[in-house]
Image (cartoon, rainbow, N blue to C red; front, side, top):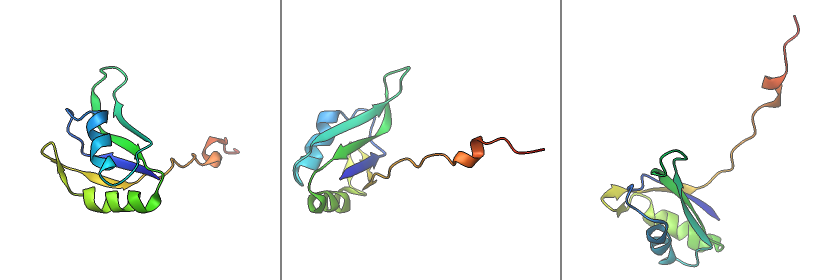
Amino acid sequence: MNIFVSNLNFKATVADLQQIFEGYGEVTSAKIIKDRNTGRSKGFGFVEMPDDAQAQQAMSELNGATFYDRELRVFEAKPIEEKDQKSNVDSEN
């Protein structure tokens, strides 16, 4: 399951993020999204856990938990929806 984690302290590292989720089960990947220009954290990231039950427990218990003096927001990541193809079609005059 892919998990979205927001409200991360800018000092948090990928290793920190992985460690807190490993308390609930196996973590296959963890990443913190960074600004392309500055390389600074954008304050959110993603964690991938293969076991859905463990992922659900992690989300339930970590959502609202304090981590580096910030209250985490933890939810199942949703895929980005494709833009409506109709918006790319020119209207007839």
